[in-house]
Length: 164
Image (spheres, rainbow, N blue to C red):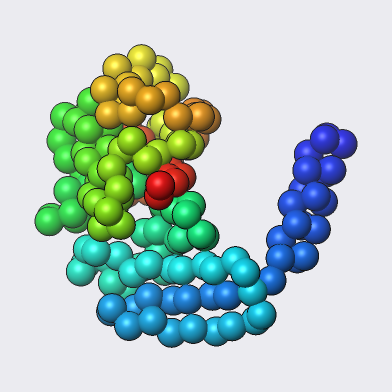
């Protein structure tokens, strides 16, 4: 508990000691709000037209780091989950991540960290077999199970990528 509190305190001190420059990208136009800063944060609009009014960004850029919002096994053309269970949803989830990365001139080799949330931890082995084919570089990863993911999904994955 003390370690978590110390980590939170150090992160808070770090973030509040950094000066930031915020850029919001909406419909191809940039709006800037500057507060004297070496760190630039860009909130990128989604490349999916049906997600234009979502209350989150698909990717937030901080320098060379890209923080991608969690993706689920949704077919973006129909906005429905793919059928076929954990295997099909895992493949679609990873394809959705590839699509977001591609919008920023990156691919899966740029991923350095992932967070995987499974609806059922019993799906771990099946998910893992597919996951390792998409991310053979073995980025750092956290995996856990949580009840009731968005849209009834069996899996959600978010990643951090570095643009080199």
